[in-house]
Image (cartoon, rainbow, N blue to C red; front, top):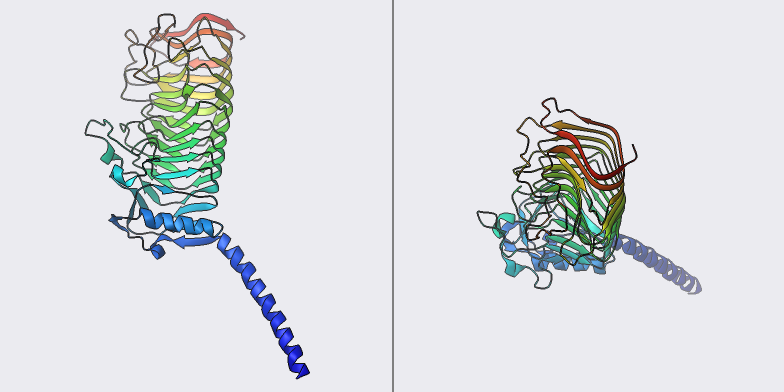
Length: 434
């Protein structure tokens, strides 16, 4: 009996250790779980609304400590607004389609977007499947917008985000908005919208920092990559090895520039068929400083009358707006093919400070050179007016117009204009270093 009692104690001890081992393994497993939305009852017929089912899967994953919610290949899963949570990744298998509902009533009244995250971290969207925004359902035959999920995907006050390999197609509005976010990776993402689709910015970096945009293909009806600041400086943004096609600006600062942008690098990018290649609009009193653009090919070939491979401008949004500043901007290794011209202008009351063009080539495009006689400089927004005390140099018939600059450096700048269609350089109120 004694031996049996000892054996029983050993068995109980072993059982406790086994249970502990099993518990630990379950704990580890639940942190990295993969929940298939079909297991929750999702239908892939493209008609059934799966919003509640998808949210249950996301919430279950979050309660278990995190992991991924899987959208399997085959069929189309229709949904309204879903909210991502901390430690939860949405993974779309190759061949899967997550499609936004065409009805605004299927979107959250407070957050009328497709995918939302607020004050979350360690999460994102992965996989090589498709997120389809059903864009054409939200504008008319003239591309005038109706009520729509705007922006489409938004992440507010989030940290440690990752978007990789995913395809974001047919957005009804701004595609991916990073608002007050920190530490974000966007890698090998494909964004494609109709080139006339309204307000379909590819990636908006708003009041955010430490953002890495790499190896992406962006083709869209508005700005490709756009940096905006309202109450926080946008800083430490790196965008490299991207192909960008835009009906507006491929790379843009502003027009929201109330605080500013600094310490950003854009390199090894190819810009095609865009109205602007690189555009810095400073009209809100903030400052743009210490940014560089290197090893970039820019071909402006758009439907617009005027084009600007490089456009830099200080102005004011309203008559009462104070003038902002632009300083220490460096362009190097830039090749441009354009029918337009480069316009870089401060104001007499606020000169641009220290700008460098190094190893830059401009080649006139085969199509007819744009007629600048009736041009007015763009304001970045059709609703904004012009003020008589703000100078406009857009009608100067030169390939490069520089105005109101303290410290302009030009090194190895080549214009291959055999026809001499324009003056090469025009300077007004410029202090040159080299």
